[in-house]
Image (cartoon, rainbow, N blue to C red):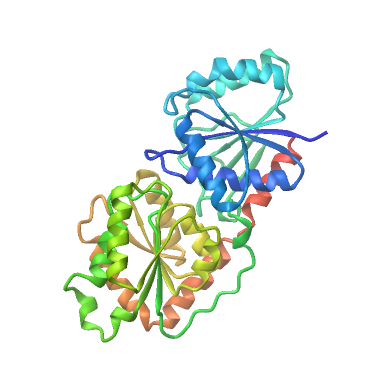
Length: 360
C-alpha cells in the first residue's frame, strides 16, 4: 500500500519561494521512493508558484487549495478536520513561519479525535518553540543542543534538502577567476542584483581600475517572483553589456554554478546549493531569519558574510571589493570551496524522505 504524504507549504511575493522549493525537493524524493505526495496550499498564488517551479524542473506535483489566508493558518483547521477524517494521511509535513502552538494543537486534536495513526513533521529554522511533532528538520550549521524533543531529529547542514543535480559534483578552483554567479533568490525587493551589476559594469568604481575587467562575465539568476519592470531593467542592462547573461526558468542550476569561479547570493537554499557544488561565495542577508545562519557559515570559513543590506548602505561596494580581491587569490577561494563541500553533501532531501517513511 502506497503511503500518503501531505505537505503544507506556501509561496508568494511576500514569503518568497524557499518553503515551496525545498518541499518540492523532498516530495520528489518521496515519490521516487514510492509514496503518494500532495501539497496542501492556502491560495491560488501558491498554486501558481508551484506550477511555475514544477515546469522549470520538468516535474509534476498534486496539490489542493484550501482557499484560506496563508498568514492565518488556523483557518485551515476546520477544513483539514474533514480531509483527515475522510482520507487518513500517513504523514503531514508542515513548513510555514506562521504556525503557532494553536495550529499544532489543532492538528493533534484532529488526529486524536478521529483515532488516526498520522505522524507529523516540521521544517524549522526559527526556533520559536519546541514543536510537538514526530519529526523535526533543521539544517542550520549550528543547532542548539537539546532544543527539540521530537522523537526523530534531523539536524545539521547534511540535511539541507537539495535537488539531485547537486550531488557528487566535481568542481575545480582555477588560478584566475573569470566568471561570477549572482542571485538574490526568488525575490529581490532591494534590487541588489541590479545595483551590483551597475557597480561592476557601469559606475566609476574600483572595477574601472582593472584592465580588461569588462571581459569578466557574470551569470545572473532571475528569480521566479521578480516583478516585470525589474526584469525589464535587467534585460536592458544585459543588452548593453554582453558580459552579463540572464537566466530565467533554469532547470540546470548546478551546471551554471559549476562553471562559475565565485558567487554572490542571499542567505537561503541557493547558499546551500553553492556550498554543495563548492563555489566560493560571499553572502548577504536581507531578512531576519537569514542573519544567524549565514553568520554560522562564515564562522566555519565556508563563505564570506558581507552583512545585512537593509542596514549597510555600503554593502554593494563591500561585495565588489571582495570579488576583486578574490579574482587572483586561488588559495583563498580553494579553502572556502573545500570547507563548503565538507559542510553540505547534497543528499539531504533523500535522508529526510527516508526518515519520513521509516517513521510511518
